[in-house]
Amino acid sequence: APDTKTLQRPNNALIFHPPGKLESAIRDGDCKLLIKWTAKGKVADRQLYLVHFNPTELGHDLAQDNPAKVAEMEKQLLD
Image (cartoon, rainbow, N blue to C red):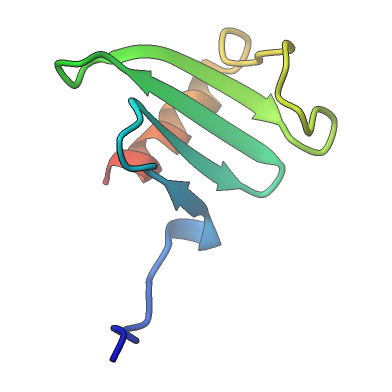
């Protein structure tokens, strides 16, 4: 039988760690933070998107203009 434990998420955020890919993501409300990793497990890149305004996530990376939001979401992702 599948494991049916209740999953606790910070602020009801969705967290993704796709197997075999060097990236992780967290979606919290309209914000989505995408982190790309190096093969050694170090952060290679951080990208922040407002999904409501940019559902394809192409261009319009807001990470540089919103370092506090990036840090908050990255902490949620890695805790």
